[in-house]
Image (cartoon, rainbow, N blue to C red; front, side, top):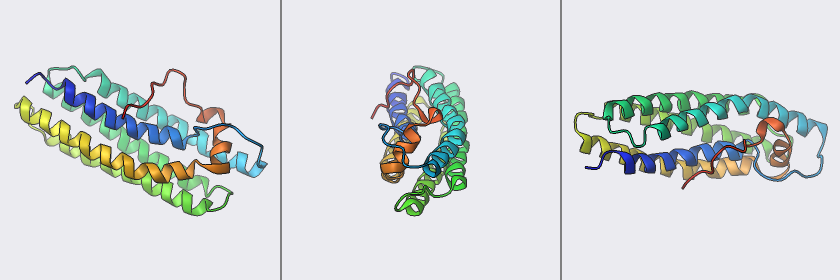
Length: 196
Protein backbone atom coordinates (compact mmCIF):
# COMPACT_ATOMS: atom_id res chain seq x y z
CA UNK A 1 0.00 0.00 0.00
CA UNK A 2 1.45 3.37 -0.98
CA UNK A 3 -0.42 5.39 1.61
CA UNK A 4 -3.59 7.35 1.12
CA UNK A 5 -2.32 9.88 -1.46
CA UNK A 6 -4.12 8.53 -4.59
CA UNK A 7 -7.34 8.08 -2.64
CA UNK A 8 -7.16 11.55 -1.12
CA UNK A 9 -6.65 13.04 -4.59
CA UNK A 10 -9.87 11.34 -5.75
CA UNK A 11 -11.69 12.55 -2.65
CA UNK A 12 -10.35 16.06 -3.14
CA UNK A 13 -11.50 16.09 -6.76
CA UNK A 14 -15.01 15.12 -5.65
CA UNK A 15 -14.98 17.75 -2.90
CA UNK A 16 -13.81 20.38 -5.37
CA UNK A 17 -16.86 19.55 -7.46
CA UNK A 18 -19.08 20.37 -4.50
CA UNK A 19 -17.33 23.68 -3.97
CA UNK A 20 -17.68 24.45 -7.65
CA UNK A 21 -21.44 24.12 -7.29
CA UNK A 22 -21.46 26.76 -4.59
CA UNK A 23 -19.25 29.05 -6.62
CA UNK A 24 -21.59 28.60 -9.56
CA UNK A 25 -24.49 29.51 -7.32
CA UNK A 26 -22.68 32.60 -6.10
CA UNK A 27 -22.50 34.13 -9.51
CA UNK A 28 -20.35 32.79 -12.30
CA UNK A 29 -21.13 34.31 -15.64
CA UNK A 30 -21.08 37.65 -17.34
CA UNK A 31 -22.76 40.86 -16.36
CA UNK A 32 -25.57 42.12 -18.47
CA UNK A 33 -28.10 44.87 -18.51
CA UNK A 34 -29.48 46.26 -15.29
CA UNK A 35 -32.77 44.41 -14.88
CA UNK A 36 -33.99 46.56 -12.04
CA UNK A 37 -33.25 47.61 -8.50
CA UNK A 38 -35.39 44.83 -7.03
CA UNK A 39 -33.33 42.12 -8.71
CA UNK A 40 -30.06 43.84 -7.76
CA UNK A 41 -31.19 44.18 -4.14
CA UNK A 42 -32.11 40.49 -4.08
CA UNK A 43 -28.73 39.51 -5.55
CA UNK A 44 -26.85 41.64 -2.99
CA UNK A 45 -28.78 40.01 -0.14
CA UNK A 46 -27.97 36.52 -1.42
CA UNK A 47 -24.32 37.22 -2.17
CA UNK A 48 -23.49 39.08 1.04
CA UNK A 49 -24.84 36.29 3.24
CA UNK A 50 -23.34 33.47 1.18
CA UNK A 51 -19.75 34.70 0.83
CA UNK A 52 -18.64 33.77 4.39
CA UNK A 53 -19.97 30.23 3.90
CA UNK A 54 -18.20 29.84 0.56
CA UNK A 55 -14.96 30.82 2.31
CA UNK A 56 -15.58 28.19 5.00
CA UNK A 57 -16.07 25.53 2.33
CA UNK A 58 -12.87 26.61 0.57
CA UNK A 59 -10.95 26.44 3.87
CA UNK A 60 -12.39 23.00 4.68
CA UNK A 61 -11.42 21.66 1.28
CA UNK A 62 -7.95 23.22 1.63
CA UNK A 63 -7.47 21.34 4.90
CA UNK A 64 -8.24 18.09 3.08
CA UNK A 65 -5.66 19.04 0.46
CA UNK A 66 -3.13 19.62 3.22
CA UNK A 67 -3.23 15.95 4.27
CA UNK A 68 -3.44 14.32 0.86
CA UNK A 69 0.10 12.95 1.16
CA UNK A 70 -0.14 12.31 4.91
CA UNK A 71 0.86 8.80 5.94
CA UNK A 72 -0.77 8.97 9.40
CA UNK A 73 -4.30 7.61 8.91
CA UNK A 74 -5.49 9.06 12.22
CA UNK A 75 -4.42 12.56 11.19
CA UNK A 76 -6.18 12.16 7.83
CA UNK A 77 -9.29 10.94 9.64
CA UNK A 78 -9.31 13.87 12.08
CA UNK A 79 -8.71 16.43 9.35
CA UNK A 80 -11.33 15.00 6.98
CA UNK A 81 -13.88 14.67 9.79
CA UNK A 82 -13.44 18.32 10.80
CA UNK A 83 -13.64 19.44 7.16
CA UNK A 84 -16.80 17.42 6.55
CA UNK A 85 -18.41 18.97 9.65
CA UNK A 86 -17.44 22.44 8.46
CA UNK A 87 -19.10 21.68 5.12
CA UNK A 88 -22.23 20.33 6.85
CA UNK A 89 -22.57 23.65 8.67
CA UNK A 90 -21.67 25.81 5.68
CA UNK A 91 -24.07 24.13 3.24
CA UNK A 92 -26.87 24.34 5.82
CA UNK A 93 -26.14 28.04 6.24
CA UNK A 94 -26.11 28.50 2.46
CA UNK A 95 -29.49 26.81 2.18
CA UNK A 96 -30.79 29.14 4.90
CA UNK A 97 -29.35 32.18 3.09
CA UNK A 98 -31.06 31.26 -0.17
CA UNK A 99 -34.30 30.55 1.72
CA UNK A 100 -34.16 33.84 3.64
CA UNK A 101 -33.43 35.89 0.52
CA UNK A 102 -36.75 34.82 -0.94
CA UNK A 103 -37.38 33.88 -4.54
CA UNK A 104 -35.51 35.88 -7.15
CA UNK A 105 -37.90 38.28 -8.94
CA UNK A 106 -37.70 36.39 -12.25
CA UNK A 107 -39.76 33.79 -14.10
CA UNK A 108 -39.78 30.47 -12.19
CA UNK A 109 -37.89 32.19 -9.36
CA UNK A 110 -39.77 30.38 -6.60
CA UNK A 111 -39.27 26.94 -8.14
CA UNK A 112 -35.59 27.62 -8.81
CA UNK A 113 -35.10 28.86 -5.25
CA UNK A 114 -36.75 25.74 -3.82
CA UNK A 115 -34.59 23.49 -6.02
CA UNK A 116 -31.43 25.31 -4.92
CA UNK A 117 -32.35 25.09 -1.22
CA UNK A 118 -33.02 21.37 -1.58
CA UNK A 119 -29.71 20.83 -3.42
CA UNK A 120 -27.78 22.67 -0.70
CA UNK A 121 -29.54 20.73 2.06
CA UNK A 122 -28.79 17.50 0.22
CA UNK A 123 -25.11 18.46 0.08
CA UNK A 124 -25.12 19.18 3.81
CA UNK A 125 -26.77 15.84 4.59
CA UNK A 126 -24.28 14.02 2.39
CA UNK A 127 -21.33 15.67 4.12
CA UNK A 128 -22.85 14.60 7.44
CA UNK A 129 -23.02 11.05 6.11
CA UNK A 130 -19.40 11.28 4.96
CA UNK A 131 -18.34 12.52 8.40
CA UNK A 132 -20.08 9.56 10.01
CA UNK A 133 -18.34 7.21 7.58
CA UNK A 134 -14.86 8.68 8.01
CA UNK A 135 -15.25 8.66 11.80
CA UNK A 136 -16.09 4.94 11.64
CA UNK A 137 -13.08 3.96 9.51
CA UNK A 138 -10.46 1.71 11.08
CA UNK A 139 -7.24 3.72 11.05
CA UNK A 140 -5.19 0.75 12.26
CA UNK A 141 -5.62 -0.96 8.88
CA UNK A 142 -4.31 1.39 6.18
CA UNK A 143 -5.66 -0.71 3.32
CA UNK A 144 -9.19 -0.69 4.74
CA UNK A 145 -8.90 3.00 5.59
CA UNK A 146 -7.79 3.80 2.06
CA UNK A 147 -10.63 1.74 0.57
CA UNK A 148 -13.11 3.57 2.80
CA UNK A 149 -11.87 6.94 1.56
CA UNK A 150 -12.14 5.74 -2.02
CA UNK A 151 -15.78 4.72 -1.50
CA UNK A 152 -16.59 8.10 0.03
CA UNK A 153 -15.11 9.91 -2.97
CA UNK A 154 -17.40 7.94 -5.28
CA UNK A 155 -20.45 8.78 -3.13
CA UNK A 156 -19.66 12.49 -3.18
CA UNK A 157 -19.02 12.48 -6.90
CA UNK A 158 -22.50 11.09 -7.55
CA UNK A 159 -24.09 13.69 -5.28
CA UNK A 160 -22.29 16.59 -6.94
CA UNK A 161 -23.78 15.65 -10.29
CA UNK A 162 -27.33 15.50 -8.94
CA UNK A 163 -27.18 18.79 -7.07
CA UNK A 164 -25.42 20.65 -9.84
CA UNK A 165 -28.44 20.85 -12.11
CA UNK A 166 -30.63 22.72 -9.59
CA UNK A 167 -27.85 25.13 -8.68
CA UNK A 168 -27.00 25.87 -12.31
CA UNK A 169 -30.66 26.60 -13.00
CA UNK A 170 -30.82 28.92 -9.99
CA UNK A 171 -27.88 31.03 -11.17
CA UNK A 172 -28.99 31.19 -14.79
CA UNK A 173 -30.69 34.03 -16.62
CA UNK A 174 -31.40 37.40 -15.03
CA UNK A 175 -30.84 36.18 -11.45
CA UNK A 176 -27.40 34.83 -12.34
CA UNK A 177 -26.48 38.06 -14.13
CA UNK A 178 -27.57 40.10 -11.12
CA UNK A 179 -25.48 37.92 -8.79
CA UNK A 180 -22.46 38.13 -11.11
CA UNK A 181 -22.43 41.92 -10.68
CA UNK A 182 -22.12 41.70 -6.90
CA UNK A 183 -18.59 42.05 -5.50
CA UNK A 184 -19.35 39.50 -2.76
CA UNK A 185 -20.24 36.92 -5.42
CA UNK A 186 -17.04 37.21 -7.40
CA UNK A 187 -14.70 34.23 -7.29
CA UNK A 188 -11.33 35.14 -5.78
CA UNK A 189 -8.53 35.16 -8.34
CA UNK A 190 -6.53 32.85 -6.09
CA UNK A 191 -9.25 30.19 -6.14
CA UNK A 192 -7.95 27.15 -8.03
CA UNK A 193 -10.28 25.64 -10.61
CA UNK A 194 -12.30 22.64 -9.53
CA UNK A 195 -10.96 19.27 -10.59
CA UNK A 196 -13.35 16.66 -11.85
